[in-house]
Image 1 (tube, helix red, strand yellow):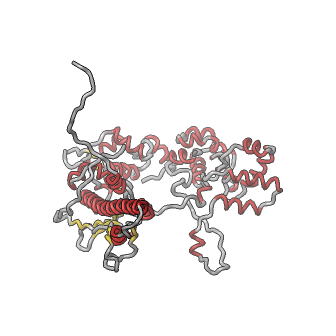
Image 2 (cartoon, rainbow, N blue to C red; image 1 turned 60 degrees about the vertical axis):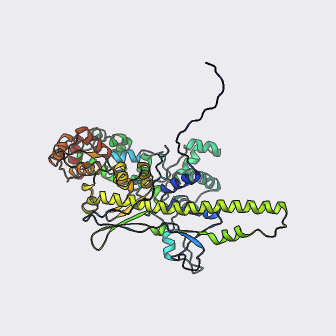
Image 3 (cartoon, rainbow, N blue to C red; image 1 turned 90 degrees about the vertical axis):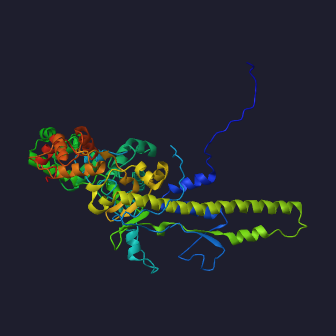
Length: 520
């Protein structure tokens, strides 16, 4: 058989990802706020797109515009009569692309933490108030967040110091991290400044007097020691406890009793004092602005008891396609005796505007399709999880992407994109749409299965209600859940318990008897 080049014709199917399709997929997985930012970029880039402000539509004198109403209509779900949802648009069936210092560890191990954590303990401080111009208000002052750096510098200016100490102090301030700790070792700072280490340490001692106490610490132990010294509670027993924080994290109560030389009651009081301290005092000050969680979908009860599902129109951008401007340019051409160069420019301009028109029209279509698809998916989630909305977490049903996709006749990848980065405001709070998709736990009688999230909540409720004399083992929890129709393995209970940072039954019994854990 001769080997050589030859031509062959083959027929096949392939999916081509056009730029327009890529854009539509991208829009589908953006949140409302991200979508607004994207549309703003398109408004700057495309001269045929204009923003629609207010509630005015094409009837307000702009009849030559095509309007993209991205809000969509609300969906009413009357679950008792099992009303079907509005028909879906065609889905795009494309598969998706594929220095902490120990405070948190010790705090989590103790159940409540050694103090406020980095996520919840953020207190805004008012900025400088100036009323000379008559325009500043108390509300504006209270809404300002003073940064840690400016707070420290304001106090450092009021403290007596020599010019050399001022320079050293500013260098130390520059080394503060957001938690209020000194981020660079003292010898390295001294070497960098060309100053004696003793002089740098002397300035550090002054800076450690700045309110709140605990700033400029070099370790968690020093941070807590500074606060305890201010309260005149840094006795040898307390110092020993601070020297063995890792044992506190392991809940090694017998070992701490032996090392600290105190009885059970005194150790309990000492641990409570440590818990009352702030391991990260720097987080009391303003850092990055905290962003308010704005829901993409609202779910509420209607007057007749049916569930109403609607998009948050306040955060959805609305755009107009200026077809009049395009038509005027397309009709233009000027005199026939134009030169070749001018005609070439006109041709290039028309080509550019034609591309802009296609892009604008596709954006309008994609925005509308996105709104309808989100509304459709959200409505099906509400229909599936109606018991949760009425009765609470214990009635959250197991749900997966496939179950929703089959009902609304879309691809799983489309449902996955819709539920990414989207939040839903319900009467029970604001949840990510992904929250409603949970694994399934079988029922003992072969009946309806249970949601893994609901089972975790039941386990936590059982443990919270136990007494010091009747602490539930994992086997006992399995037995109790089995009596309620839940078929779950012991190792699964242990996995869920550990994921919720709940200690074993042996450790809980010891801590509850010591008064270190609340008793139900």
